[in-house]
Image 1: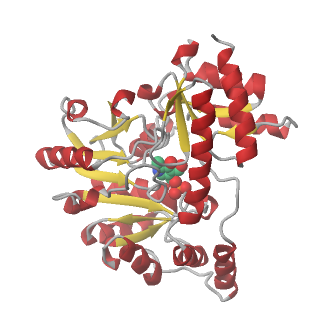
Image 2: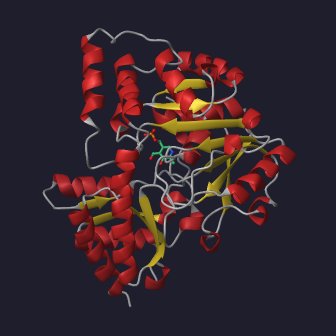
Image 3: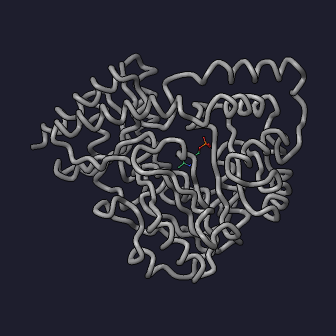
Length: 379
Ligand code: PLP
């Protein structure tokens, strides 16, 4: 069987960046006590009102095909939160499906898609799955990992630019000046902006500014969001796309060809989630963890990039002389603590590690204290 070049080259290196996570899982299955600060998945359950609503909906018979673009009630609620209309919203199977849909809407095979590097680990394969060419745009920690005009100036020939604020892995939250600069770039170069805002409810410094609200961007921005991070609903696989009505109408054809819609009982859970809050409960948990982590890492002399948002903390471990990969591998083998190497998020994050704040405070404290001690072994 000769498979497609597309599927065989989705992961250019043949490696998907999650190796440490898979190893940690194997070690745990073999009986070792591993503390995982690796993937962005919560260690706690969603609010019971979400589970109750989902259960009630399923029992009431919402287990059939539903409207492909999502239930009107949920589309309306998401639209309302973003000053949009139902026709500008489609419900998707998670932020990941929303991202794929957004890229499919924006590009043709062979088109170039700029990604701010460091980037979320699935971006390159998602772009390639849609036939696009990945153009990494490195940004610097001294600029808080936000792109500058100088970073974008040499980048030419893009069809789309993919940005993520608050950012995974860096925790950067783009301010007004950054967004104005991005808007200028997109307008001047006729670039479609794809804005990944799955961490919008988790902002620790400043405020979340949605790029689509920047002057001139609404008609060329495709925004994606998710209930995964805001309401601890990762396994529900539910998110949304927000875009001009013409884009949403066309995305229905893509959904026909892929998921054929999102289960209605899952959407009922999402309705209950948004009815309860906009993600404040979950955000409060991560804010406390972020504060604890910054204190321990700071006191331990680690070089930390304080996150302005999101569920992660980035540490620059170059003073240890190790690559992010070597550091993460040894930390797992020697101490049973799993973190992501920066290299999983592009070249600009090399020599860093990303710590996911996905453990209760006491376990997080134990793990971070051990991580600090481990780093000192390289002094
Ligand atoms: N975008 C970013 C930046 C993420 O970190 C994630 C998940 O970690 C996603 C999108 C996809 O999230 P989901 O498909 O669970 O909504």
